[in-house]
Image (cartoon, rainbow, N blue to C red; front, side, top):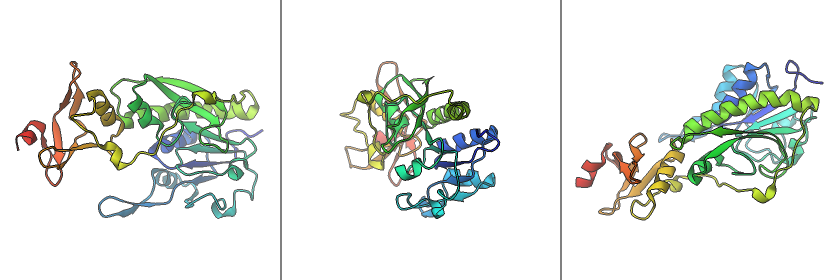
Length: 287
């Protein structure tokens, strides 16, 4: 039986959520043989090639990193089948992993998913939870199969969250919980102490990839509650914006200056009109 000193595993992850999971593994003496993450991408106005957070973290900790464009054709360097692996771990990787790769390790491929599966399967579980207005979310550790977030569950734990929590804050809390759960689950799964339980697929809900256009709101037609949920869900990206009635100018509602008052009305304090500096909302309305 493998223990945490000689467990031969690969970690697949890309985002800040994945960084926290990997950090928790290393803190508990689980060191991956390889870290697989997404390729560097151009970012910002100058489109500077930027490495994903997991790559930065892995390099700081002297971990071997591969960044394949796709896993559909063959594993990184064709090397995943060259040696016996005990386990693969996936956390917010962002790319499809074919079944031929998921089935390579002796104990399968575990995924840390930031929702209470089968709720919120897919690419945006945290944002979708905030948008839904539901009160409870959590983390699920599952055994991956060929379908997205479909595999049997090894562990699931609820997290109580404040109604006004923003995406980044919730992501951090779920990552912390997920990392703790994972280091508890790994030895129990390998020893056979816990079993995988099939999801209730009839209760499944599905999320979609978030894009810039999702941040558009209509101050006249959208309910204050829905606008506020979008504000919370889409921080720091893509944020929320609207088009002013008087000149159709794009106006961004700034991060820290929006709240839902006790009367149920939406209170906007600061905005940033296109091609202008940020300003008080009242001042903007008088322009």
